[in-house]
Image 1 (cartoon, protein in one colour):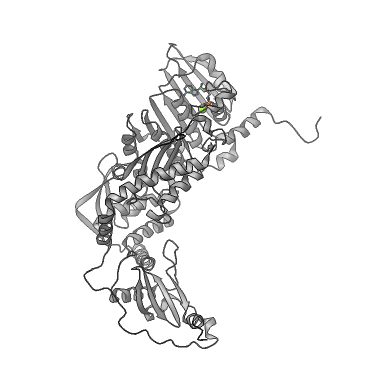
Image 2: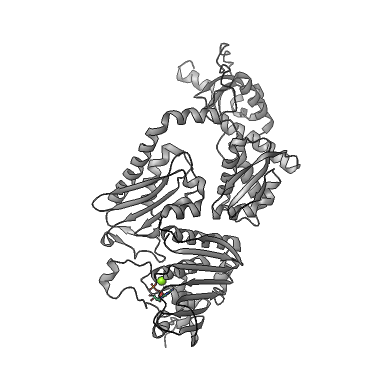
Length: 574
Ligand code: ADP
Ligand code: MG
C-alpha cells in the first residue's frame, strides 16, 4: 500500500482535466458551436438560460452522429477528425482532440439527441457527471442537439467562481460573435432567457455578416485588405482612422479560419495605427490569415486560441505591410479636406477672432526666499492668479505663477472642469435636457444595443431619452443640453463602448463616472485649438475652483510646473 500518494479515482481526474478546456459557460458554447461547424451545419441555434449557468442548448442541422458512435463521442480522445499523427499537421477542422464532449459531460448534466441522414431514427443519450445514464432511440430531425444543464453542479468551487449572469453572458456573446464572423455561410441564432439576442441569416458575403454584427455606421468606415505573398494570404477589413475603439475587443484575427489571439499580430497592427489614432485607442480589424497548415502549430494551447507560427517575422511583416499600404492608399486620397473638417467641426471657438498672443512683456522673476522652496507646492486652487504667457501648439497653456512656470494641458483641464460640473448637476438632478425637434436615429450592433438596454435608465437621468424603433434601430429624442447635436451619435456610441468591460449590475457609481467621463471628454476644448486670451483666463478661473484635483477624469495630468530658478541654474546665473 502506498503511504501518501493515491491514484485519483477516474471521476475526479476527469473533472480536473475538464477544467482545462471548460472554464466557464462560454467555453461550452464555443466547443459546441465548433462541433456543429465541423459537422457541416448550415444553421446553428444557441439557447441559454441565466448566462448559460442554468442551461446551454446548441442545435444544428449537421451530419449527426451514428448510434454506434454516440458512446465513443463521450470518451476522451475519441474523435472523427484525425486518425494518424501526421494529421495533426494538416488540420482543417476546428476540433481534433476529442476532448470537448467528455469534458463538458464530466462537469454537467448533459443530453445529446442526434440523427444521421441515412437513419430514420435518432439516438438520445443522458449523461450525468460524465457517466452515461441511458441511451435510447428517439424520433428527431437530422442533426445534433446538445443540452448542457447545471454546469459545474458537481464542482462547487468552480461554480462559486462563476461571475454574474451578465458577465458570463458577455463572454458567451464574444465567443458567438467570433464564430459567426468567420462563417457567414452558416445562419446563427442566439436566444437568452427566451429573448432572441442575435439572428444572422446565412450569406455568401463577409461584408453582409459584418454589417449584421457591427451595424451600418461602422461598416461604412471599413476598408478591404487583400494581400498575398508566397507563404501567406491575407484578407479582411480594417477601420479607417476616423473611427477607433477604446478596447482591443474589435480586433478579430483568424488563422485558417480559427479565431486566435496573437501578440505578434497585435504588435503589427498597433505599429500601423499608433500614430494615426493615438494612445489608448484601437482600430476595428477583421483579418483572415491563410497559411499552409505545415507553417503553423495549432496544438499549443488548451482552448486552441493561440497558434505558433514557424516564421513569425514573416507574419509580422506581411500584416504590417498589408495594413500600412491599405491605409496609405486611402489617406492619400483624403488628407487635405480631412484636416479642415476636424478644425471646423471640433472647435467650439470662433477662429475669426485673433488668437491670444504675448502682448505684455513677461513679468520679472521674483526671487524665492530660501526655505520657501520646501513649502511651495503648486495647486490649482490658485490658478486664477497664474499669469498666462502663451499657448503652445494650440494645445498647452504656459503660465507664470509663484516662482514657477506652469504648463497646462487645455483639454485635460477643461475635461476635469466639465466632469465636476456634470457630476454636481447629476447628483442634484439639475442636468438640463433638450428635446430634439427631429429625433436622431442610430443603428447599433446587436452587442451595443444589448448594453444600451442595460443603461437606458441611467442615461435618462443625464438627459438621453432613447426609444427603440426597430430591431437594432434607436431614436434619440432628447439629449443633455450641453452636448452638440453633431456629436450625439459619437458620444452615445463611445459611452456604450466604454462600458463593454463593465459588469453592469452592481456598479452604479462607476458606470455613471464612466459615462460622465466620456461626455466630458467630448465636450471639452480639443488640443490643436487656438484660444483667445479671455478664454484662457476663463479656463484658469474655473480651474481654481477644482481644489486639488490634478488629473483629468481619465487620470492624465492637467499640469506640471517648472521652477523658474531652474532657468537661473541653466543660464549659470546662480
Ligand atoms: P473533437 O471535436 O475534438 O473531435 P469532441 O469531443 O468535441 O471532439 O467531439 C467528439 C466527436 O463527436 C467529434 O469528433 C464528432 O465526430 C462528434 N460530434 C460532436 N459534436 C457533433 C455534432 N454537433 N455533430 C456531429 N458530430 C459531432
Ligand atoms: Mg470538438
